[in-house]
Amino acid sequence: MNKTTKGAFAASAAAVLLLGGAGSLAYWSDSETIKGGDVTAGSLSLDTPSCDADWTYAGSVANTGTVVRFVPGDVVTKSCTFVVRGAGDNLKATLTAPQTAAVGANVEADVTVAYKLGAADMTSPAVVTAADNGKTVTAKITVTFPFGTAETGSPAENINNMQGSTAALDDIAVSLVQINPNA
Image 1: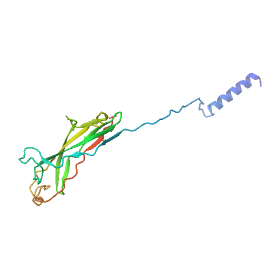
Image 2: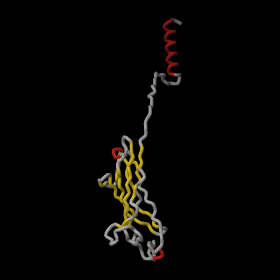
Image 3: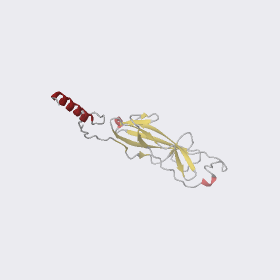
């Protein structure tokens, strides 16, 4: 075999080896590692509230003082202040509360809450950001006891056997819930 034939044969063999014999192609590659580093999470909380000592009557009823004995249809209110704690580059959160609260086993009272940040009224939804860290939020909680239905109504509310009884109004939780910054 002459040198040219041997060289061509060697080149063909090398090409077959590079192709892997199965039609694949060998190629060069490289990768580099990017160090992750530390990231620090933010935070979100409400300090323990400071609340009015008692529920008081609201609206246009004659009795505007402290609630001693409610009757169906009464509207009562209580104010609580919280300090907002929040840190995070894109932190946004809403203040929320339940829309109803149980009064004993038979009654659901309607709940509404109006919020102020400092002295400014907040619109609904009440949104706070990291810029509000350390500021005071006031929640004015209003509970409306239903006037109810007749004893034969369905469901019967504030039925006569509730008169004179003592029933606990459920606790009302004010929550601070983060909003997805990418939504």
